[in-house]
Image 1 (cartoon, helix red, strand yellow):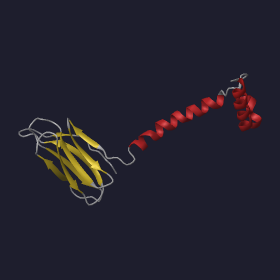
Image 2 (spheres, one colour):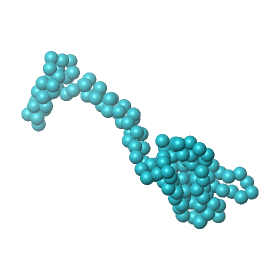
Image 3 (spheres, helix red, strand yellow):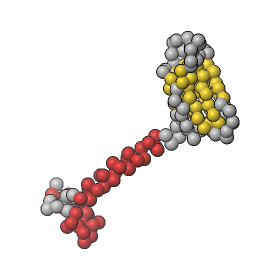
Image 4 (cartoon, helix red, strand yellow):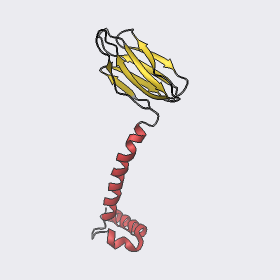
Length: 145
């Protein structure tokens, strides 16, 4: 074990050059440099993790158990009815190229999906539960592009 620590210490000293005594304590373990590297790694993880998580995935807009979902790589939108409440659902969406809002309806009941192929990328979409005799329930707008 001592032999391994010495070889590790020698490698560290070779990497750090003349500044080695400043970064090493009396046992040969890195202090300041290790703290700086671990801090930088933590910061990088917080900064880049959200970017990697959404790199090529679509976004969900939920309204209760119902949701709309965009398929980024294939220009499709989906509306899913996830509630056994007898209400229909619709996806409201806007195309990136502009224009009016469009809708995709699903009246087929619980755990059913409807899909629509699109001519290009979406600018935004949201799920809406259709409630007869009262205002519809809206999910949040999602902006995939």
